[in-house]
Length: 581
Image (cartoon, rainbow, N blue to C red; front, side):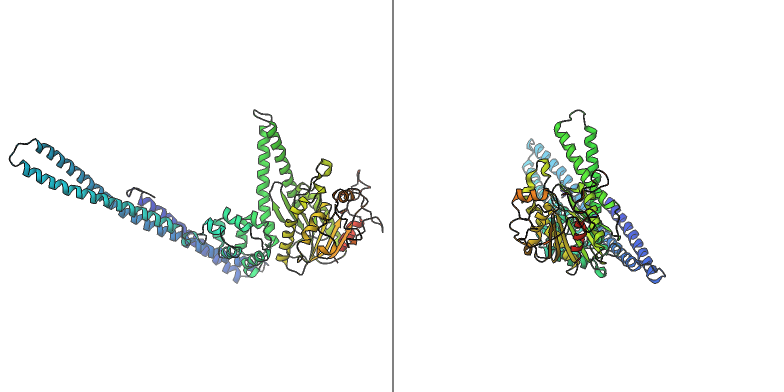
């Protein structure tokens, strides 16, 4: 706070207030024009399917503009009142300063007269000395009074500063978000969602990226509560869609993309939009890091540590690039399906998932869970496997289907690279809660009436079996284990998976059996486990799996090799049938 009551320029403060009033007038005029256009569209002949959504959005924009103008007006009013108070305080300060200067001059003159009188031998010297002492005492009293008046003025100035700052921080000026980080952190999930429900679009945009709010919202772990909150934000549009949703939902996507994109219970169109924003920004930053390090390479100060950092940065960039390529790449689909980025966490390592098909509307959803050695750099390959499965599903059902390539956990590295973690359950136990939360979010968002399937491969069966066994209310239709690296002993049988149907099959390959033997985990295709055998061998004009990979066959050196999701295999066909029962 200012300790000098004369500081500041009231004219400049009034000038700022005047500019705010001009801006408020401009905002209000623009808002009225938007409202007018909305009325024209509503009353006009425009028949486009988005007419209602446009009119609603335009009305919301107009209302937001009016609210913003009111906030700006209030700020201008506060500044004008502040300038008036400062002006009054400054005027009084000048008066007190002048009085203090006169008092100082009078005290100085009195002291000189006293000093001169001490040398006098006049008969009335003592009488005159008494008079000067009386005057000096009065001047000292005035000095103390003036100093007290000055301190009172300092206090009034500090109070004026504090009051103006407080009023500029009120909700009437900055909107509803006049809430401290400590208050947000201390909120329960219910309180937080209720608070967020009261925010208007312009207020949400104004607090974009607020770390306290983002961190707290990220910790909300009840997908049903999130789903209800998100649907309530949509008003008449409910949870919304890409073409029809509320301005508030749009504002949350834009303001907190890294949170909304992974918040279980939020509609998938919104998660997709949010994750595209995050991916674009993260990929650009990753490319810049690599370019910056490459520019330093072999220059002064280059070291093995920087070489290692460049290798890590390049690997990270390549993973994000392949994930981005996965959303762009064309796949031959029997039925068209939108591409949705359903999750993206930047890590490292970065993790994410892409759906082929609309999870918000599909009657049948299948999560493909990969195993050993899979990273985001394999996104395009896993999406091809997902596309093959979705195409094969169309042979058995006319329902809309969605297949998710879910690289949402850190998989074990290839054992051929010297990484033995595939033989242990550590990464499975770390990944299982992530998959459970994802599937619970799906159920909360779309409801109980759709078919939900899990198709897991390799170590993905180890991890996903833990996930579904710990979430009995998912309503899984079919759980399919392909080339399993083994089911942990704490998942004793098929019934523990809480699925209507459980299938398992291993091809003519040695990697999956080696993983089961080396780890001591159970074979889900064994008689004692209780799964139904899924035929992945040759027969009926279809090829049999003879490689551990999800995809192996090509027209070059791998003409005779077939993975679990290769077109033309019994494995793919039977998995498709199992997930459409």
